[in-house]
Image 1 (cartoon, one colour):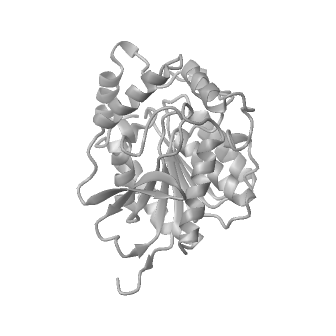
Image 2: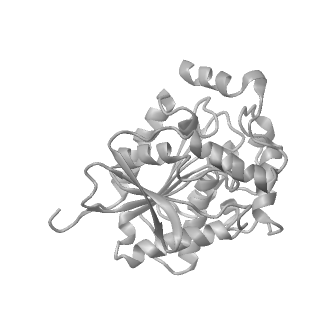
Image 3: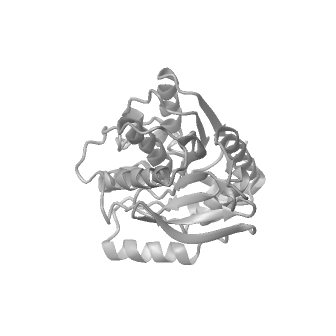
Amino acid sequence: MASTQHDVLVEELTPGGRRPTPDVKPSPEGLVAARAAMEEFALPIDAGVASEAASLGGVPGIWFRPDGTEDIDAAIIYFHGGGFMFGSPSNTGHVTARLAKAAGIPAFSVDYRLSWQAPFPAPVEDALAVYRALLDTGLEPECIALAGDSAGGGLAISTLVAARDAGLALPSCAYTTSAFTDCTVSGESVTGIDDPIVSGDGLLMLADAYLDGADPTDPLASPLFADLHGLPPLLLHVGGREALLDDTIRVADRARAAGVEVTVEVIDGAIHIWQYFGPDLPETVASDADAGRFLTAHTRLIPRPGG
């Protein structure tokens, strides 16, 4: 059962049962305005976490460095959500900063190209470029973890598949929450769950814009359909009250069948990306702590000489 605080938040977010996710693609001007508005009203990041704009492999992003991690060689590569149409590292900075702080590992949030800037496979190309750039700095794969929410969660898994198929050594692990893994939007939970945040029509609009005519079953667009053998350990969080519940359950089943170590946590009654909407919810505190423990346990932290 969801907490009382969670239910109050849902009422505030969805007065009269309104679904915030649009069903019709906004105009280019509307998307630019929406991005600016989301960044303007972004929630503050936690105290004790410094942020710095940077780029890796020619891809812009933001580093979030918790106090005490300045002399640690390790990194989380974070992919923000927003259906490949919305969102940014700034807008989701409070989520990335909390995760970095919980894990004690600096995180680079990737400002990958969105569907209205460059559709699939551009985000996967950007994600792989960032991973290659970290490897090129001399950072060992076991010192790197991937993480992401919603579309960014699906992108994290797609990046693992792309890296494996490119012959790269894989990161230590990956953590996703509310992952969007199926651009065919075929999960039973899409219509079987009363999701107050995301609609099936909204998901189809986002997928169509992202694909721009590409095959929705392409394994790099929809990791649900990928060969998942050889991937590192996965921790998958998902809300019990979200249309994307089956995206997580089904990709977890396929990963286990491929021999991957997978842990799934279904947060009873939680809505889509509850950690984004409610930083102080009991569900968020528990989820952040669990993810932090997982990332710390699986990622090698190397002190820098003299650090």
